[in-house]
Image: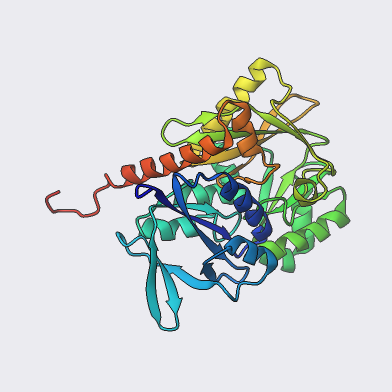
Length: 369
């Protein structure tokens, strides 16, 4: 019992994906072995306040966090303490061995939290600052994919300022990248929050304004008519592995937030019914995309398969994929022979491996090692 790993699970967050994070956290917490781990729940409210205590998840789900203890992690190497904030005094609560950031979207999946954990010199699950930030920004991610000659759909980026001050000019440029349908997406968000499938000029106008509410950078992307949506889970650090691919048949016109988390009518097909050669190609591209952004620990790579041409496009990468009851990431690994509890164990192992690798980095110049 004394050798149990002290695991901090961070969830919630100041993001449009706050509720999705809570769903993922509930699923992960349910499979953590009490014989292996002492679990410390750390919640982040919609307003960005850090809290800990008993039943943090339930408190965030119900919106009643007054009984919880304000908490903080300090960016000081070697401390690894979660502190309680009691008026003007910081009180050490528990020394963490490793952190699982179960945060989706901004301030959790975009490299910001990873920067804090790096400064604190803590082991944590998932990609580092670079991989997280590149994976989060859909536009920058596409640029990296193009550099590595990985196929993506045509797109361009408009800023919130451009959309608000030159809306018609942005729409005119959008209409040059392809015929409708076109997609409008906040560059730095997931779970299809703020995403609009635009079939005409009016849809584009409304979609741009909505997306700009969620991010200052907005991606406008060429759409495909009824593509197949294929997803692959990737696991590992230096030698990542790809799972069998799965296929999503969304209940809506595309895989919307409603289709993902609310109506329960979307269909997941695992493994995806694809020819063997196509499966090998998709898995290979998933690993290439993962390595191109310096992925670590885990990611889910999403593809679009054009049914008319059979061309394969990488849609995006999720460096903290969903872990809800319907999420593809754990389901794909289960179908590939790695059960959910063992997957979590492996992710924690990978976090320690990555930390050990970071520890080999020399931090001072001109002195003896």
